[in-house]
Length: 78
Image (cartoon, helix red, strand yellow):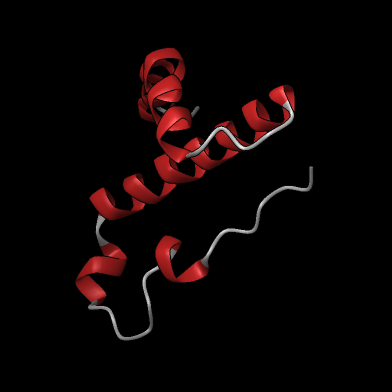
């Protein structure tokens, strides 16, 4: 199963969106988390041979990976 294409309109601020939104650390964090969930969805879908859906991937990722992912992102780089 090929990796699904991500719609740019929903994962990146549009040219018409406010500069505040594009610079928002909260929005950038949302986009990074969404990208991880989509990657998890793809991997898990590959394992079972069919699309598991975003909601299932989201819940699975939150339970299994979110805490570690956030901890890793907040760790100061040396």
